[in-house]
Image (cartoon, rainbow, N blue to C red):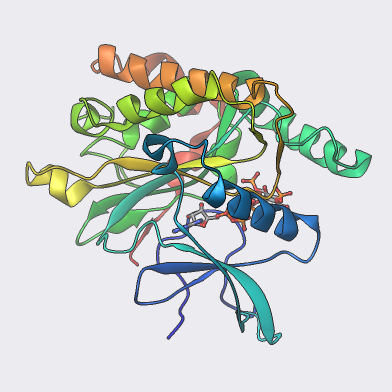
Length: 305
Ligand SMILES: Nc1ncnc2c1ncn2[C@@H]1O[C@H](COP(=O)(O)OP(=O)(O)OP(=O)(O)O)[C@@H](O)[C@H]1O
Ligand SMILES: O=P(O)(O)O[C@@H]1[C@@H](O)[C@H](OP(=O)(O)O)[C@@H](OP(=O)(O)O)[C@H](O)[C@H]1OP(=O)(O)O
């Protein structure tokens, strides 16, 4: 039985007659193929990647498992439509905190049409993509059993300054984050989510070392999806912090050249996360949302889902 995912934080969302991804009970995520070249490009990528023997296993683990494509009933009621069948990255998680971070200061491939480049360039300029090399594209943070999730409006966190991006990355790993609270994030879980030999930072550094060498693909407009379970962290247990790369609708061949756009964005994200680990107490007093006019981020409601 297919259903609308409980924990999708960005992209095209199913429900209310709209076309979007679906999940089943066995841990699979069904993403509808977009009718234009985005759908075929993503299938081409997954097909090539899954059979490419040059991809080391320690890098392959950063990608969802690909189970091919399948014709299924589309969520918008339009009938049978081909879908990518992928590993559901939050299957088995109870209350996952999730952040979708789109990597790269440029989200368009050189081969794209002028109209598409213009559309992307506008958004890259208006968001943190151009100045920081990445933008937060989707977010939900588990608050508590009573309050559910804090899932702010997507437009509220795409255009943040560097200081406020830092603040969101801190809130993501804090025990005192909620829609109501604008207290300084305590970064209680920074060391077990971002830090340690198996934490997010170590994983990102491993990915980075591959990107310093690989020239097979260029990953435009691709995201890293960070997830962990705050409830486990609260109980002092390992919170299962991990990331996977998602959204390959704009991946093109690398042509023997380093993907400096993705690599640059990844280095920038790594720097932000490293700084949180080295200076966990240094919160963003200089980046008051009230000063920067970004209050909307802090006024989003918690979502009980
Ligand atoms: N394999 C997966 N397992 C679980 N959740 C996923 C998976 N892939 C994507 N998602 C969820 O769906 C969201 C959107 O994913 P994706 O970017 O691939 O879709 P999209 O519709 O192409 O988005 P966009 O139009 O923004 O490019 C992600 O932020 C994440 O919450
Ligand atoms: O609507 P489209 O043409 O599929 O383009 C989406 C775009 O609408 C979406 O922006 P938003 O409406 O969710 O704000 C972009 O997501 P980000 O905000 O995360 O950048 C998508 O990336 C666009 O899709 P695509 O990247 O395939 O052009």
